Image (tube, rainbow, N blue to C red; front, top):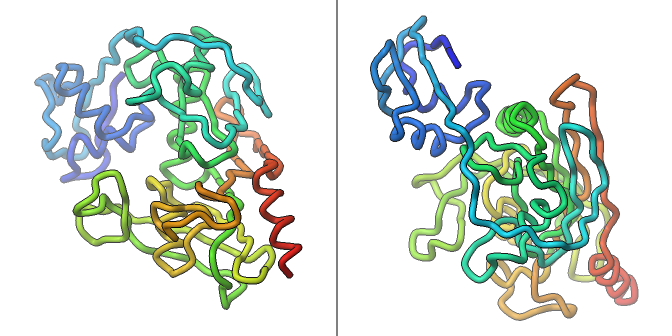
Length: 301
């Protein structure tokens, strides 16, 4: 693919990360290491600075098969066409294989259900997961079936035109009816498994929230993500003093109301279809665990 630089002084890796390739900066840098990026006819380096009009040539290698075993499992598919599938992920299901979860993840289930009908845009034949949600967060997850869909949806994530709305129950009563948390998020300085609000090595993060209903000691809220940082809603709500019920990592250390993992559900996903641009709006009702907590709170009123 041939691309023309349009900003003077921009780093090569940053230019490619915002291009229509739909790749992350780390994926771009991996392509450079493999000699797949050329700037003006020579191998490109991540910190090369561009001039307007510079020619950048990118060769996407053939996808490599990944060592992930397909596994039959029930998948709650709430939307599907030739380009995109949206899954309603249950609480407790890991998205990608990792230590301790090699063959029981959503990726394993997608490989079984769809085989080769998934994108390989990141250089691997794998399910085209466009964005992630935590193991103990339930709700909607978009999956691309081809490279075009993956690139377009990734671009919508990057420019904040993919709307993601979450339902959550937080501890305490919020005074205002709605608000915005605008605070950068980065890795915790001493615990690398956690994120935190910090100015150091962080990225901008914005969460909009509104109250759905107040209960005695708790509040049901709806959050809309403007950005998509790791653990963003969990970190932001804890930051303003209202951690998510059941979140023993960022909130209260002891389970409350029988919840030992966060009450957080990705209930709505809206995007423009990658092929024709029409709006697609998908919704997932509150799962049983969430409804049971609300019933308990109603009885406490």
